Amino acid sequence: MQLDAIDTLLLRYLQIDAKQTNKELSSKLNLSVTAVYERIKKLERNGIIKNYVTLLNSEKVGLGFMVFCHIKLIQHSKEHLTKFEAEVNTLDEVLECFHVSGEYDYLLKVMVRDMAHFRSFMVTKLTTLQHVGSTQSSFTINEVKNTTAITFS
Amino acid sequence: MQLDAIDTLLLRYLQIDAKQTNKELSSKLNLSVTAVYERIKKLERNGIIKNYVTLLNSEKVGLGFMVFCHIKLIQHSKEHLTKFEAEVNTLDEVLECFHVSGEYDYLLKVMVRDMAHFRSFMVTKLTTLQHVGSTQSSFTINEVKNTTAITFS
DNA sequence: AGTGAAAGAACGAAAAC
DNA sequence: GTTTTCGTTCTTTCACT
Image (cartoon, rainbow over all chains, first blue to last red):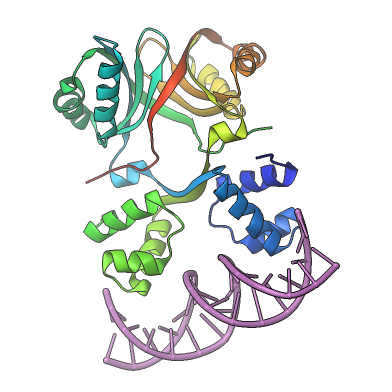
C-alpha cells in the first residue's frame, strides 16, 4: 500500500495518541471526519496499523528494574533455536527477544521488580532453558529515550 | 495507589487492546460500565496508565532493519553524559536508549530502512555526536518476542 | 479519492439506591 | 460500590460528487 503525505501525518498523530477522536484528527489534517475514518480503516485493513495499546508506568506497578540479557546458545541447530524461542515467549519477564548478529545469539529486554526478582528469574527460568550457554547482563541505570513511535519517509 | 485484583485484570486487558469499549470491559470484569469508567479514570489520574498509542507494522512502512548499538563514551563527566543524552533524543532512528552497566555505557535500539540507511545513520549522526568512543552494533536477524504489555503481581 | 447528513452507539455526568 | 437516566459526542453507514 502506497502512503501519501496525509497518511504519514495521520500515522504520526495516531502513534502519539490513539484516543484522539476522528473529529480532532480531521481538523488537524483539514479533512472531513469521514475521510479520516476511511483512511484509518484502510490502514487497519492493510496491516499498517498493527494495534492500539495502553502503556503503563512500569515503576508504579512495581517493575522498576530493566535488564538486557545477552545470551549465547551451546548449539545452533534450527531445532534448538526454535525450542529456545518458544520457551522465551512464555516468560512474562521477557518483554522483547531478538535473534541478533555478533558474539551473542539473543538479546532480551527483561523487566523485573528488583535485583532479588532478577536473581530468581535467572536461576529458576532463564538458565534452566535448554541449550543456554553463557549469558551477560546489563542493568539499566537510566532510561534516556523510550518511544514506540517510528518516523518514516 | 494500591491496585486490587480487578485493577490488575483491567490493566491486562487495556494493555492488549486500548480500543475496547467500557461495555466490553464491564462484561469481562463482571462490573458495571460506570465502575469500569471510574477505575480507568483513576488509573489515568494516578499515572498508572501513561498513554494510549498506536503500534505500526514497521516493515510495511519501510523500516525493516533493527539494530542494537552499544556505545562507549570517551569521558564520563555529568556534563558529557547529559549532552550525549540530549542529542540522542533528537535522533528519529533511535527508538530507545538506556544508560546501562557493563563494558558499554549505552544501549540503543535503532530502526532503519536497510543497511545503507544504517551506514548513513552511523556516519552522519551517531559517530558525529560529541564524546562517542567505540561502538558495537548487533543486527537483528529475527524478532522472537516484542510486547509492550507488562505482567505484575 | 472526497463531502455532508443521519442513525446508532458510546461517553460522561448526575441522580438515587 | 451499583443501576438508571439523559444530554452530548463520536462512530459508522449511506447517498452523492
